[in-house]
Length: 190
Image 1 (tube, one colour):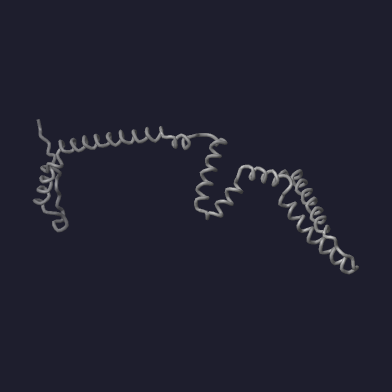
Image 2 (cartoon, rainbow, N blue to C red; image 1 turned 90 degrees about the vertical axis):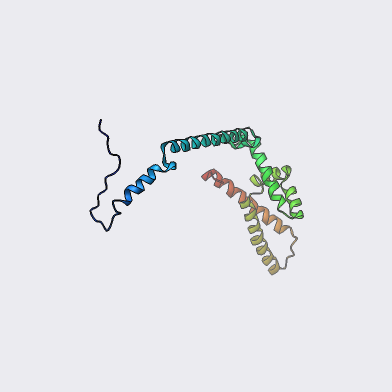
């Protein structure tokens, strides 16, 4: 059987640009004889890396198991739309965090304003009677009509009773509500 030469053949076309024929074989021999580069050493390193990777994988799995069993994990891994209990809990936590950063008077006022009874009644009033457009138009009409009535009354010499402003506001408010509901019927948007 023939024995093949496994050492690379060195060509030295230009003696100035490449190492000498004696330096390269010595470097290759030192690399091959180095115990760190032997096949057994490489296999041993690969085995160590494999055992370390398995240990890390086991520790990561135990961390995941503990995290999945914790009560906080249940709410964050939930899929689908958020229900009323989750919304209430989130709102409560947000309010507590925000109120901690307020001054004592601001915190007390916030607790009064964000009481369930006050919030529900405010929502009902805001969606029916106290519409922003109605209040704005009521205030505008109260100003314009009261100013007009005052100028006319001053010119004629008539004394005002004070009911004029209330009546003008009621007229403007009614006009604002009618406008809001017509807009809702025509466009379908609030």
